[in-house]
Length: 308
Image (tube, rainbow, N blue to C red):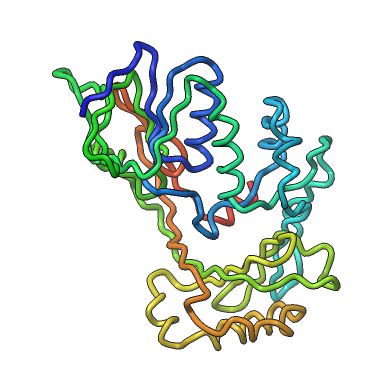
């Protein structure tokens, strides 16, 4: 099935924060934009749950911040590193001269639901969930002029003045465009899980990394729980799974003592989610008719994303 487009139109592939925000801004400016997302919903756990002060200022300028911050979130003001030699505060957002002097920790799915609902009011915006891109359309000169994708209704072709790949570190658009990404040497992966928050938890524990001799654990605060990320040597997931959750519990209890009273709640690996950490970039983010943004163009590790 062929689908036409206007002379000023854009297809954005990937409805993560970068793709969703860009699609919203384009549609708000009157550009006809189709946003294609391969999943049927946004409910995927442990994905970039932080909204930084500058992001909140931009959302405020768009008239969105006040309504967004009515959703449950946790205002994190400190980013700290705990090492065997002491604690280093690398960021104190409370010192920023803005009313958004914190990082809002909010499940990414709720942020995307909110932004999708706001964009739905714009006549130029179309969101298609469950749409898996499987090809690029090109003219005789090699310029990208659209995409092919499949959804529950079958195969489709969407013409566009510009195709934007915002589909993450494993970007299908990038592969289809034959643009190579160069790895820059990630050395660890992360196992994420949740532990409940207690009223007497340290009030300054917002976004913290705790380092041991061969592992580290990261914490992200939330209104009712802590997101805990346990570092594994790159590719050692099978080894860790065979060992079970006991070594993880022991490490967390030993390096974050105030969580020792609840680490027993991590009983099974089914409670964890593996994040395969990658650090990579492409040399050229574009070709005629096509642009890569976000992780599709430059993958950064989660601690860099949180601290930036």
